[in-house]
Image (tube, rainbow over all chains, first blue to last red; front, side, top):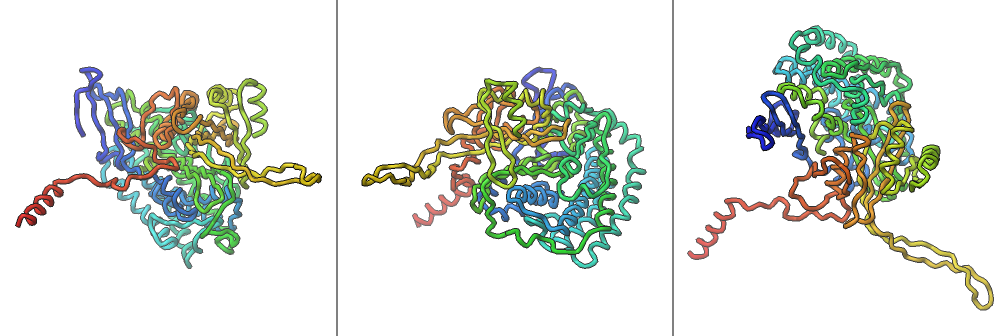
Length: 374
Length: 203
C-alpha cells in the first residue's frame, strides 16, 4: 500500500489497495481516493493476471481449448468446462448423451456447493474472522475436491467435459460417496448458519452496506447471485432450461434490498437448493454411454457459423461466443466472464462507504482473478 | 429475430438494419446495424422491446480477404449459346466488428445479436459506444478497444483495461505478431558478463 496526498484536493489522499493486498482475492488493484475514511472515488485496475486466453484458444484446436477453460475461474473448473462444451454443442448441433447430462448436473451442482462454501469462508476472512471460518469451509470443500479427484484425476484442473458428453464414466462407488456427502451437507450448512447468520458482528458489517436496486443491477450487467440478491428473479437454469434442469424441482432464492447481507445469505440458500437438485439427480441417474459416439473430439471441425452459449455458473452468467470458419481452430473465441462484469458497479457501490467496507463489498461480489483478467 | 427486425423497421424507418444469416446449426441470426444508427436502435430495443440486459460485448477482427466467386456467363460460341463458368476473385476490404448479445430479463427472451462494423481496420475505426444505454458494456467495450482497437465514441472512460497504458498494438487482431524478445530486459548481469568477456579477451 502507498499513501499519497491526492492531486484533486488537499483534503483527500490516494491509496493504492493491492495488487498484493491480502484481502483482494488475488492480484487485483483498486486506486481509492479517501476523504478521511470515506471513499470518494475508486478505480479498479485490471490485467495483472492477463495472458490473453482468447488468443491462445484461437491458435489451438477446438478440443485443446477445453483444459484452458479450467484456468478461468479455477474455483469452479467443471462449470467452465460445461459452458464451453455447451457453446460448441450449439455451434455444431451435437446431441449430448443422457447419462452425461446427469453427470454434468451433478458435477456442476457440486461445484456450486464448493464455490459457495468457499465464498462464505472468504467473506468472513475479509471481515477479519481470519482462519477459523475459512478452515471450516475448506474442510467441506476439500471433501468435494476429493470427489473431483477420484472422478477426473485432478482436484481443480479437471478437464472433464467433452463435446457431446464427458471424458470418462463415474468410478465404482462414486455415487455412494457423493450421496453420503450430500446427505450430510445440510448439517454443515446448519452449523455454519448457527455460528454466523445471527452473529452480531456479521450483521453489523453486512446489513445495509452497499445496497443495489434491481434496475441498476440489470443495467449494470450483474448476473448470478449478485443479480438475484437485488431482487431479480432470473436464473439461467430456469430461463434457458439448458441440459436437463427442467426435470428437477428447485426454487430460486431472491434478496430484497441487495445489500451485502443479501448477497451473503443468497449463497447459503442456493447451496441448500443445490443439495436438493443433487439428491434428485443421484436418485434417477440412468446407465448408458457417457459421450455421444457420433461426436468427434480430435480433428473436430464444426461447420461455419457462430453461437453464443451460456450457463448459470456459480458466480454468474458464464458465456462463450464462438465463431467457426470451418477449420480446426476457432476463428473467434470470446469468454463472457461474470467476475469481470460483476465488477462494473463496484465504484458505485463503494463510493460513500468506509474504507473497511470496500473489502467486504468486493468479497460479497465473489470474483476470481483468473477469470477477471483471463 | 424477424419480428425484432420488423419492429425496428417500423419504429425507425430511416435506420439501416439488415439481417445477417447464420449458416450453422445454432441458427442464431444477427442484426447488422449501421454505425450512425446503433445508439438509436439500442435505445429502442431497451425501452420499447424490453431488452434490458446487455450480456456480452465482443470484438471481432475481419482482415481483408479474397473471395472466389463463380459467375455464369452466356456467350455466343460458334453461333451457339453456351453457359461458361468463370471464377472471379473479389477483394473484400477488412473491418472490425463489435458484437452485442442482448437479453430481456423482464420478458425472459433472447439473445438478440447486434453487430456494428467499422469502416476499415486502420483509420476509420470509430463506432458509437452503447455504454450510456447499458452500463454493463463499460468494461467490455474497453476490452474491445484494448485488444482490437475499436474506438467507442461517447464512452465515459475509454482506456486500455488488460494491457498496460504504454502498449501500442492490439493483440487480438489476426495479423498481430508478438515480438520474439518480449521477455528480454537488460539486467546487471549483462554488464558483469561483458566485463568478464573483456577481461578474458585481454588475458
